[in-house]
Image (cartoon, rainbow, N blue to C red; front, side):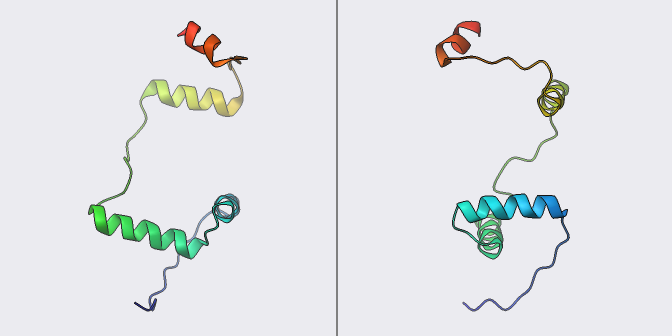
Length: 84
């Protein structure tokens, strides 16, 4: 089927650059990624991933990670497992 429709969307330049870099590493263009997304929405009759608001604990953890605070580094997976 020939592609005959155009989609226009505005996104932040940094987000666009970052996503196009990832897509390039995957060997995909933005057009291919959007087509894939639309195909999955049609097939699943909804978004192809869960969309939920994070709980308070998750929001706090994300903020700490972005700020680089209260991070713990483990040298081995076994050390992490022992801590849990």
